[in-house]
Image (cartoon, rainbow, N blue to C red; front, side):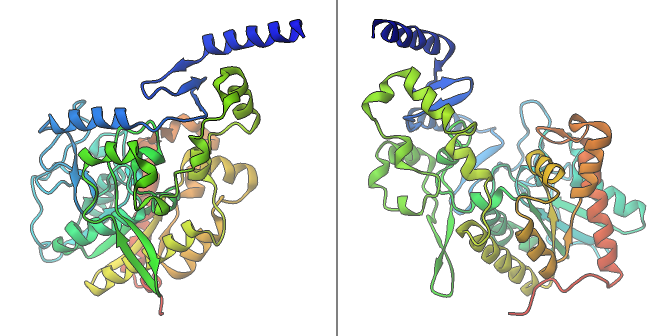
Length: 397
């Protein structure tokens, strides 16, 4: 018994020495947050104070979208520049409608659509515009992508800002994890390490359709207070990324050794990460995602524009595709292709990885090469549409 106690004590010392405690008071072992988790309300409050003290940050609160790009801003490293309309572009402002004979294309989506980690000229929107012009198509591409967005926010940004600029074609960047973001209300619950201290709107099923909740969106200066007293928040039942078990205190978890062994023994991934990347056919994420995409397409068509989707797989998705021969969300993607015009660079991205390595295609997000592959795939799909061979943009009800 004494030997066992000595061994446990030694193990406790070693685990505590290897691990660390983050600013939220969480014990972190080799980048794994060990349960019980602490809600990051202090970090959110500090981030909000920093945000409110800045008039130049590229991200700002929006009462309808949750957050958006600050018009006329530029990132500190100079990588991202936004014009007076909050669009990633060197063009100071776009006219209310395109010039005669110009094909105006508007991109909506998350950081993959925005083309994080590359300069503007290497973004797939800029490459798409240049490629179409080289092919003799007078085109301009407006990039409305915003990091962290779900499909819901992409559609809302079209309604709030995009449709007023009269695009001829709307392209939705389908990064599959965005299906899960549709189920999120508080960004710090979706990602405890987030630098976005915001809430977001969310659609829920109501009757035969969907309706929007948390609009106006909870202001940033109230997010920390909600997190601090989360169990009493009236919208908590609609937050997919909160599991009370992750925060529950039990006596044996006061031992860093036992808590770490229990969590590592449960699997290599944290529960919130699994919620983000596991796809189940017929799940709420897929059903709601389908409803939002259908609504998006119908809104676009009602405004006289075409609707297209571009599949933007992550490096993890491509690894599954290479290993298993199918996408982890294969059925959902297949259904999209049956109903909408979908540009799919997935196989070309995978081929580039197999030939040149992951780093040639991914550096956080797509590299210059990855963005070029996406742009060429979308350009080819647009050429088919211009030739009249594309499927109808919106399926019959």
